[in-house]
Length: 335
Ligand code: NAD
Picture (tube, rainbow, N blue to C red):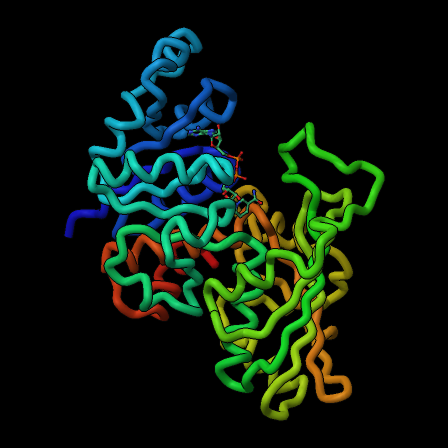
């Protein structure tokens, strides 16, 4: 069977990872990636063999920089079955008209509003709902991390109320200009934060409130999760449930921080030190006064990447079964 043709619009932190993850699958392939500027990322994309497309008024700038452009963004989109929009939050929505005009399916990322597509995706929570859809949003790194743990717990034990505190990395490792460098920033100050409503775009009935802050780190986010459950269960039950979830990694063995988790990713020779799974501290899983508590760390640069691959498979109806798609994506990535 011919491979599905995919383009990535916006080859940045998420886009470059989605491009490599798509290339690793046997049922889809990257036709091109788009860059607005001929910078070091464009040069590396060219070196990796990706065809680079750009805005029509930038082609000359690419030629001058010695990075040949294969054509314009519009030309790239004409060639594909689906485009994964990985442009910065708020920019992507402006591209919807272009995708509609070209009759191409599109996926946006968590920086866009739910209303842009009307369907927010997380593979384990609602894969089947994306089957055949034209437009889908893959939710943010934090929302992905929350859905992956809340959905299976809710399915088995019922979640009466979720309370989550998110300690967020201030910037990605390649971002030299974003702070804070010596502060803790409640972000947003207004409570509860937008993360709870975002989880509800995927699992609407969950009663959840969230608070978030930014701290001077670039490696990962950390969540304190507290769930009031409908049915009684033990910490051991939750550990066993998490073991059935391929995108949840139980951690221990002296791992006491996000720094050591990234070291594990390096030692596993993961591309770009990516940790695609939620990392739940096994020892932290506790039932106290009838409520469940645990800590999890989320690698913001990569946890949404396998989700994008599964969203492509659902939208193009390459696979109708969520578990089969998840397993296929994981296998190809080495997860
Ligand atoms: P980024 O800034 O690293 O990359 C964006 C890319 O888009 C860059 O290559 C940039 O050159 C390009 N671009 C900029 N303006 C453009 C335009 N007008 N047209 C086409 N391309 C343009 O951003 P990112 O961190 O990869 O974020 C992309 C999306 O993924 C956002 O919606 C973001 O909220 C979401 N997301 C980011 C993270 C994260 O932690 N970085 C995690 C999950 C989801």
